[in-house]
Amino acid sequence: MPEGDTVHRAAGLLDRSLTGHVLTATDFRVPQLATSDLTGGTVTTTVARGKHLLTRISHEGAELTLHTHLKMEGAWRVLRPGQPWRRPAHQARVVLRTASSVAVGFSLGVVELLPTAQEDTVVGHLGPDLLGPDWDEEEALSRLRADPARPITEALLDQRNLAGIGNMYAAELCFLAGVHPRTPVGEVAALPRLVRRSQQVLALNAERGTQSTTGSLRTGDRMWVYRRDRSPCRRCGTPVAVDMTGPAGRERATYWCPHCQPA
Image 1 (cartoon, rainbow, N blue to C red):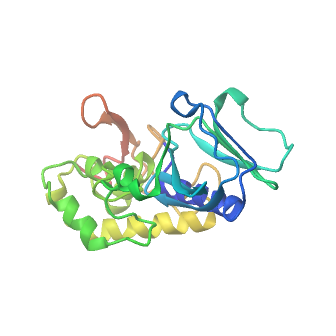
Image 2: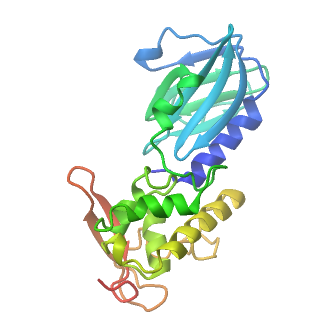
């Protein structure tokens, strides 16, 4: 699943490419919006809120928001008119055309239109955005500490506590903090440092466009434990462990080093 930094980069791409431009054609390839047409509308901005994308469009006197979410496999691509798409057309869920760009949303998990004034109905539940102007470290800590018995990985993944952390960052941040992923929040002494590092790592990776938690940008060397099950820990050589954790029906693969992150 795309992490918060990936979504913020997608928002930046859409904002640079579409903002201020008139839509010459729109194509919504989801049943609930099949008859919608925003041709003639002007894109006013695209912003990220956690893992949600909000593209605001002024159309025929109405202020509307196209709300999209990448979920597991989604992506936005911006092309020149006439440039071939790099993914199959049947995966396209939204196509926004201007005189100079074609923005295509592929395999989007959420596509909906709503009045801009009602954006809180889809993102109002989110906690402070690690990469947003509303970032508030103390508020994030307060939300995390509200359930001290909850495993730290589950708490970090809950977007109502702080928005932007996915499975990869949850695993990597726990490793960097030396915390076992099942440790209850109330027992994580370094929680403020962990949250502060979360913001720092996502901000750095959003800026450089390459996800790395080790400091290396070489392929295969960018992660400490994520998707490195049974490989030797980069610090101590102990094989990295992996297990499915989380609430029933929403389990995720969790990675950790048994030596560096003892239970």
